[in-house]
Amino acid sequence: TELEALDAGLDALIGALLESGKKVVYVIDIPYFPDTPEVCQTKSAVSKTDQCVLERSDMNRPFKPYFQVVDKLKRKYPTLAFLNAEDVVCSKNQCAQHDGNHYFYIDRDHLSVYGSEKVLARLLAPGGGG
Image 1 (cartoon, rainbow, N blue to C red):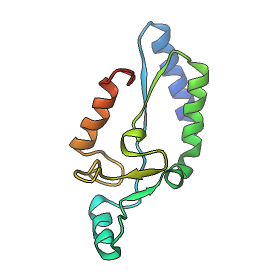
Image 2 (cartoon, rainbow, N blue to C red):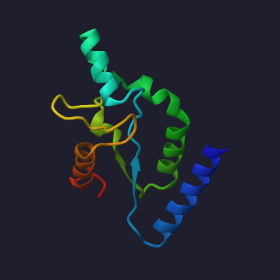
Image 3 (tube, helix red, strand yellow):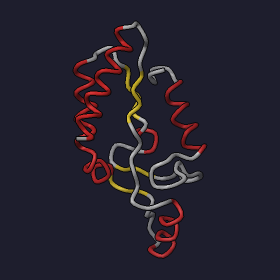
């Protein structure tokens, strides 16, 4: 399956990189939104509520197998650094396509330049993994 390929591929790649003495930072993927920023803006205008903010648990539910692979990596490779890019666009309970001023996304699952800069800033920050 695709999940087995991801698991085996990551295990082999990360193991080889760490074994060679490299510092490895695994960036956990951003959440995927059901709508593009344009669609959620339109829905927000009609509903008068922010349709670009969703519950984090609802967004992560379909990706439970992915997070299980990530958890397995964490257990197997204690020196592997992690950056949870999701934390840039999500609070503890909610994920947003925007920060109130700018949009993090250009579509349902790709970051805008602004969103990419936010993730990079987190990576380069002290304790950010990089």
